[in-house]
Amino acid sequence: MLADPLFSPAAKSEWAALLDRVEGSINRALDESAAQEEAAAEGPGSTAAPALIDDGFRGLKSRLDAAGRLAEAVEALLAADEQEALAWVGLAARVNARLAAVPGPRLS
Image (cartoon, rainbow, N blue to C red; front, side, top):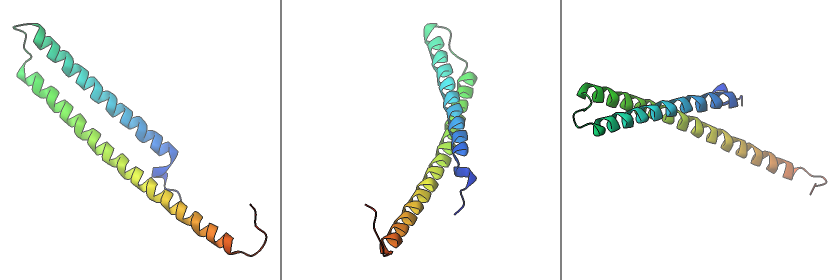
């Protein structure tokens, strides 16, 4: 069974870096939103324009959707890794059984 380059440590590292960037982007958007809310709450007449709020909400929603898609992709990678690990465990058990059936001296 050949190793799939999508499951290599380098590919996993790239996914982790991508998820870190998405998380950073979401955190920045949340910080910006909080700052806008604070600015709106500070001044009695200084309310944020509805278009600005709508744009901020759409930006947050698109980032959340992107993060969800990336999370699904990572879950698929993890599920594939789990299947690969289970396959290796199965192979190891078969080799162990074959070696146990070979007559001769045993190592303990």
